Image (tube, rainbow, N blue to C red):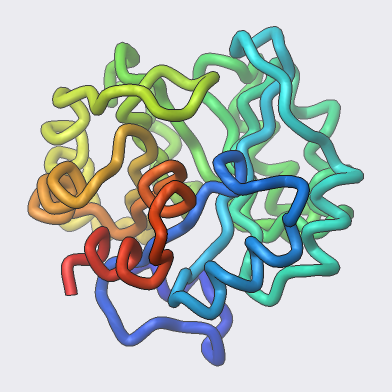
Length: 230
């Protein structure tokens, strides 16, 4: 699988690497304008960081905000749950408009159950690991997921520095996917700028999440081009 199989055909980019702006870095006082701006600038998905103040030391937003974003957006909502007990909330997030729901290996008490729950409620399912979690912990689930999210910072806050060890994980996951014939897309999130974007592209990533690199740029379209490496 490549990233475009997660996206409706009429919204697919012509490029081989997708860019998913993280709305956590957007100006929430102008959220509708910000969404329209990154969509017109060439974004492929919208990345939504959901944090509960327990699994990560920060709070963001929940299903009501995602429902509002869904009314504003034309792109698929790539929803990253950085929360404990994701099973309690998966149906609500999907009902609110989340198209892809990604949960953490470190946060779920029963990954088989939770991934199945995402599928049963009509979502695409993703699995994520933190920088210090071995890729091995994902291996038995890779035939069940649509998306593997490899964190290149420790989740909780934007603007952190890129953790280099993710590059080997990307390459290993790509090689394992090809060897086994699995269908998941590989996504990376954290510390992205034009330089680190090139490094993750070279390692074999399919989807690049970027927040501050886009929303702090004076030209969103130029930032997306630079991250995509056009």
